[in-house]
Amino acid sequence: MALTSVEHPAPQVEKPEVLAAPPATVVTPCDPWPRPYYLEGDLRRVLPYHYTYNTYCKERWRGRELLDIFASEFRDRPEDYYKDAIERGKVVLNGQPVSSIYTVVKNGDVISHTLHRHEPPVTAQPIGIVHEDNDMIVINKPAGVPVHPAGRYNYNSIVEIMRAERGHGWNPLPCNRLDRLTSGVMFIGKHPKAAEKLSLQISGRTVKKEYVARVKGEFPEGEVVCEQPILQISPKLGLNRVRANGKEAKTVFRRLAYYPPKLKANGVAEDAQENPTTHADEVKYSQMGWKKKEGYSIVRCLPLTGRTHQLRVHLQYLGHPITNDPIYSNQRVFGPSLAHGDSLADNDEDIIARLSRMGKSEVAEAVAYHDEMVEEYNKKKAEKMTGELCEICDTPLYSDPGVHELGIYLHAKRYACEDGNWEYETPLPDWALPPKGFTGPLETTSETDPLAAQAAKDLVDGVGKLGV
Image 1 (cartoon, one colour):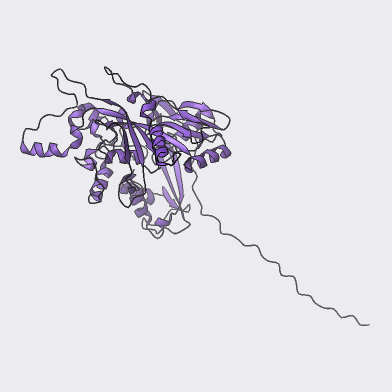
Image 2 (spheres, rainbow, N blue to C red; image 1 turned 90 degrees about the vertical axis):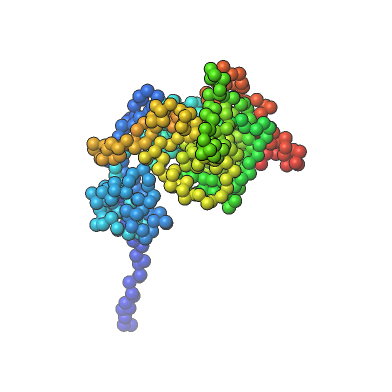
């Protein structure tokens, strides 16, 4: 039998998909250890150092020019700085210098910015430990220190300070958030499982939170409930206001103490204003409702929702802003009424423009540090651009913040699990204690507890438990 050879086609081998390499990035030339901290007086400082920011193109940046993105999104440096940085190759796209400041950024691009970084100083007050176990650390966060590296702050943050104290390889995992200017209870997970469990508890609203604030004037006695919705007006400036089209927000307030102003030798209150002498003065004075609010109150605050700046915005709306709040208690930004009872959008653009100047050409002053209520020395001793430049990088330099800028009178005092399994609390901060010459509560009392008041109200209403 004759044999016939049959040719079989070679088997088709599927070629693996070749993925495009990710865009090139620039790596920070150093990761200094130990961190370049040093303490000077009441401040924790960081020596300037080189650092590279890498970020993927955000959706809102697509199709926009590179300089336009930096000029509109990052306010800590002037546009001329970013123009020069792009032209000199300090800002690169996908690891390569660009040919023009008008280069258009596309989806998937990586923008890298290497700079000589100058961090603002923060308080030298140590991070207090309220409780520690194998899973977490409960801290008493100092005011004025951000939780995470952000903006002008990197090593001067809770995360990096704790890492510096416990070792380079230790990774603190914050479970709740507090504004930079706010002090008080924070939870730091020691490992991901513990952090996730507590974070879910807090986000699921099964944790009760109580704050204390020091506000302008005599806050009403009894329970005060504010249910005004809150809308973010400017993400860039972090400005929020009461608006009918905002997100639902509810806060229960209860006064702990009221301290009237001390009397001068002539019998006039220390914070009382001079009597107006002209008709123009009378009109101006009549518009400044806050000037008639003498003394200050310590107020316990129970937020039943978790909107950004909720307590600060609600207290401003009620006419009792936090006395040293550089935003919501700032007459230069909000005008003579300090937005008491204001929920209209008519003057939002003007407010945003005025706020954007604070810390650059003007000092950010709360009413407690405004006009005749403070010595000229304290007015000048506040953070703003000095007009000087760094000898290495030509970065505009800022002056040191004043003591009144390192934090505001808002403190997260207590966190408690709804089912009663745990509760953590700090003492009252110094600014909430009775001033010299006055008697008052040294701690919170059950009679002024907004948690108990709200729980009792819920029982009467048939709710049965606190829906936080």
